[in-house]
Amino acid sequence: MQNPIRPDDSFTRSAGRQLALYGGAAVAILVILMFTLDFIAGLTSASGGGTAGAVDVENREITVYLREEPPQLNSMLATDAVSGMVLGHVMEGLLRYDANAQIVPGLAERWEIDGTRAVFHLRENARWSNGEPITAQDFEFAWKTALDPATASQYAFIFYAIKNAEAANTGALPVADVGVRALDARTLEVELAQPIAYFDKLVAFTTYLPVSEAFFNATAGRYGADADEMLYSGPFMMSSWVHGASLRLERNPYYWDQARVRLNAINAAYVTSDSNTLLNLYKDGRIVQVDLTAEMLEGAMQQRWHLDRFMDGSVFFIDFNHRPDRVTRNVNLRKAMQLAQNSNELVDRVIKLPGYLPAKSLFPVWLQGVDRPFREEFPAPEATYDVALAREYLERARQELGLTEFPPLVLLADTSPVATISSQYYQEVFKRNLGLDLIIDAQTFQQRLAKMDVGDFDIVLSGWGPDYNDPLTFADLYASWNLNNRGRYASPRVDELVRQAQSSTDNAQRMAAFGEIQQILFDDVAMIGNYERGRVYATDPRVKGILRRVFGAEVDYTNAYIEVAP
Image (spheres, rainbow, N blue to C red):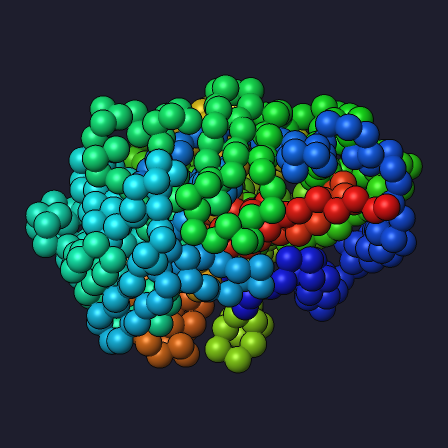
């Protein structure tokens, strides 16, 4: 993934790189906005979160919002950032990331990784939210269950570093043969398929969380479906969940590290991504933090709110359906669409938020290479915006597909503000430049994921955030075995290069493999980059210690506390 980034300096670093990489009006606009925001950042008004509701000082509670309903809180099945954010507060695994994005002990008080053997030693005071001990068996059960083909976990591949994990997941071996076992209640032994330098980073990811086998079986297939159908290992536990409306997290009295938990409750009282609603909620002092869209910036500036900036590490793109029954399987159609759009225009004229960068690659600009940033060592290939050439490729595609004219293409997107304006932009661009009709299928976040899973789209506005601190977290997205590869792109050479990067401990060799993957994905137009996402947000000045993360929960309240001036 990347060099660890402190919570509030990644915008500055990425913006500085943008000044070096991109020129012209985009940079001028960004610089003006940065100076404007730097000026406003020193000004705090009581009108921003200044009334009762967002902060309950006496009870040490805060009120926040979720932009979407969490689609899946079964950690063995979860794939999305919203679910990951909630799980990051109510669950903890063997290892976790600290406030400086460094791997530190979680439920494991210590661990050793030596060649192909890793051993984790659990804390004596590791407890579930019902007071029962968390054991090494809880990890063995969760990992092997996620690998069971019957579970159909889209993240099963993240265990493939473990001996026999891939063979078990594909049904070639029984799950019992996977190289993970509880030596005793507090000792977990893991056999690796080969030495890898990043296994500790994998272990900090959501799918590596523990699950109590007895509790899981008692839920009769509903584990994670409601607040009372989960056991919690993290700083908080979910006391209520009104689906589609709210959920409430309360302090877990059995969490081992009580000293770092200073809030008694986090009340996610609102589930919405509507810009006007969120602006009014924060303005009226009903939520402690809000992410701003371009439409909200002017109002925030007028209120003189304290604004911060953060690059969240994710990249967004047009993903294609490569299945045989879809016209988007044709590479010349994809090339035509690649040449007929311009991500600079999308970022600078449509999204218009500071911190966003045009996405030139699946590999974002912050990823570290051997000695320098990866994209400096392996510059991203870039298609020239060329409508005339795009139309030539479109005609080749028409002839190859045997069409007299192209049918309307279904563009799947969610209903978030940025997705809405992006889908409308691409609908207009591809109609104007190529004569293609795009039918926008706008769905809730959860329903978009469901439609992507079954391939119910021609193109989809998708995105990917880093799961762990290594470039492989992006490189293996288009591996043929990765179920998050929802368009079912397949390239034997990409698969081969991913295998090389997984098994090699030579960093230069691994980066060269990633560089070749980057070129293949461009040549095949497996995807078209949209943007790398930045966040501009306002925070109630009474709440300190909120972290914005690249790895783990994207907004982390586990270290937050309330501080009221005399």
